[in-house]
Length: 238
Ligand code: SAM
Image 1 (cartoon, rainbow, N blue to C red):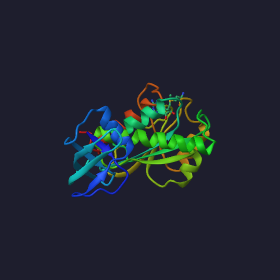
Image 2: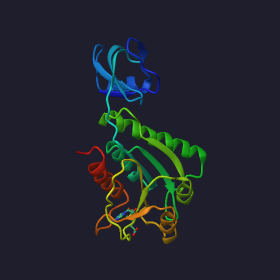
Image 3: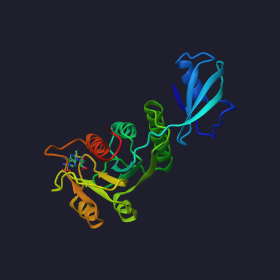
Image 4: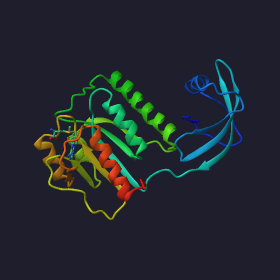
């Protein structure tokens, strides 16, 4: 079992596990002596032994650190207009499993999610971050994808300087031939799609239009299809 801890970890030390972890350990009915893996996002897996577990606390002894490379050489940035309900949660989870490097949340003309209230935004960010952490625990990643707080699409386009594609069912461009690896961005729209002005703004910033075949995919399907193809062709999905 893998658990994320937001703290420095070092072999040969004993640590007190936070409540979120010991509650999970109790649900799993693990006993003292069990082997667990801890990670903190620094690229290592830390083998540990559960040294004590009571109803209100747990301690672990960190035994060893191992650098385990599970990050793709292709640093995929997903610039994602937020969708409603649990679709966004689902996309965050699956993109993490597919090895996305960073997720930039966006609002746009046809975005139906409104987060004007700071407290609600902070709660949402915490919730999304937890989804990324849980996905990393499950899929073995030991580097967390970056998560950028929502901002308007046009502002993001104006400030971003990396090669990218805007996923647009009306685009004429298909899959590109690429030679370079490194950072690449995919901009994905909401259920209502992008406005013509938004597509034009992206093209003016040198984003290339990308059409994913003849069918319209749902807002949660399109990013996963595109991430999978790019990881397969240029990354580590092979
Ligand atoms: N009627 C909308 C339109 O024409 O754009 C459909 C939007 S679609 C449900 C949600 C988003 O997924 C789109 O904004 C686009 O980014 C992406 N998408 C869906 N199907 C696509 C396709 N075949 N090619 C490229 N992008 C697609």
